[in-house]
Image (tube, rainbow, N blue to C red; front, side, top):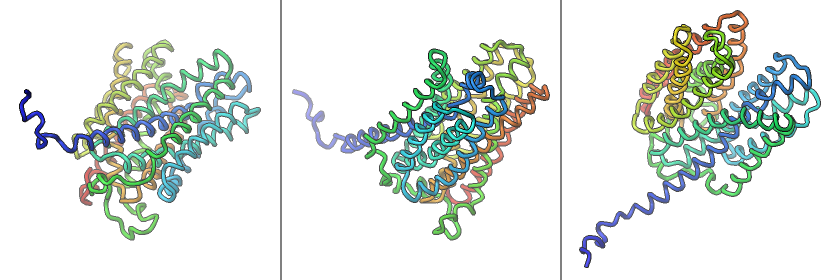
Length: 427
């Protein structure tokens, strides 16, 4: 006969079932939001991998092709700032559905484009669709995920974006090589359509209600007090919000340098083959995803997220400056690119939690929309800035400035953290 202690009701944890339900609910919300976010990052590169085919068929210059991406990010940046207000007014779920629909339609417009004007219109429509994801995603995560798991939620969210960036060139170039660039874009249109269908089926997981657990945790929902807090624009009087905005412009400039001209700079500095330079970029993206995964655990175990960001970007900036010297052997330069990506990835979940701490209660969508519009601004200017360096035969300066921007981002993060702590929040 088994001991009585094995069946003693007093030793059965009454919260086990509740905890299991909470974990499953959080995992479902995180998974749905992450899949949608991956699609949005896929569409960041909806045209760039197809430039060789577009140039061949239409005879466009690279400058005109680059303008298509500038149009994408300009619309996305403006739309992102405005989308936050819409999210706070009507809810994140319908706005997210709208964004996925726009992406699907934009791919169809691009696939059927007969001329440059329609290509530009399709790219701008994709930018409009992309603009809603950050305010929608972060509002859903903040409202629907338990506070203790938010670090992991932001980590998965960031990883999904990196995977979207990594998947787009492979998917589009393979389909275009096997069929045509138009077929590749038609196939790409199926991705947001499929994800939209998935989110509609599980729409009850994404309703706009606030979790009681989150409400109970005052620090997780209530940011710093604002003057005239009832006004819809009151959050814009917070210096911490604008420091976050500046942080995103600076870090996006660094990322834009990596995405646009790191490969060309490496080939010039080290005499790398195209394969080696591509491998270095792949190392950056994969290490960044790994760093984001690890950063989620780190963010969940620390209160001073500004310090985590400072340490991560100090490391990444130092690795960038080492690459800029041109002294390491080729194989080590590839490894160092991975190190730069890992440092940037470590900072990502802490960055998102830092913004959350700076956001006033009930202004999550507006704050994330305005702050993340800085990301699009940085990505819009980065190709122009780093392209000018390459045109001037300053390949080493590409990595010098990538490192400089990463180090400059530290000052903004520390300032946000200090202001948030002074206001009584968590940094």
